[in-house]
Image 1: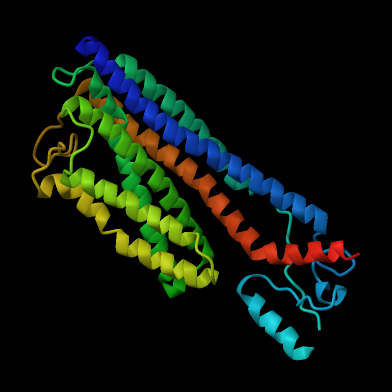
Image 2 (image 1 turned 60 degrees about the horizontal axis):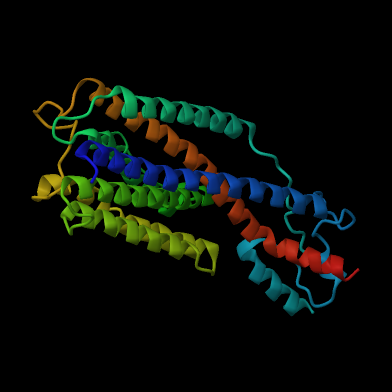
Length: 89
Length: 252
């Protein structure tokens, strides 16, 4: 049977260990997510070109490239853009 | 008809943010190292609590950061709902802070449970403070789940901001529960109105340092998490553009 002194250190180790594992693990996960997202954004941008012109390989001009694909805008304007294409076609 | 879309831009990390992150990260690492030395070696054991008094150098500070994180979430949500200050950045900050708060709430509950097992002989009891902390944890886990729902990003951000504001009153109720009700959990250790702190000397210094160290650590984590939130929103926003461009490339 462990003495009270040893048992006390066991609880201290448990408390510090739990906080270290939870907070430390979270820190590692956040930093890794940030690095992964940064890489993803850079690689996708590099793959597409950045000027946005139809000749640059950027997403502008997508509508003409393939029939049936709506013109593109980001975010909440997306549905409006799709509707505009359908009306125009 | 051609609608010119905003092209994704390959911005590298903001140099100012990188510098602030470096300083905060360095201070956090140094602070944690000093805190461990003071907390585990320099400060003496207590008369009644023995060695377990060393938990006072981490558990209250972690709990305080939980409150601060949920407070930042509520303030950012308020700024988002206020028409004059509305910006997606406030929504990102609220989401980032809530997630950090949930992690610190889990750390508070687990470390408190371990300490309670030694002090009270039980891992858990439905004491006011413990129950309210558990409620905070569960409510903000729900908030994080709400942030993951689909639909219009603006409507979702408004829903989440409102939820955060409705959940926030739990924070002061939780914090003051030891003063308002008879609880098994002890009250304040340092800020006792009209009374001296319960600890002194190295114990007091180490406990005060723990609040500073965890605050700096929180700021550093929040900065990184905010960047993640912003990048995720950007990917969600521009993902449609990229998906179309990929299909276009496949069709060549």
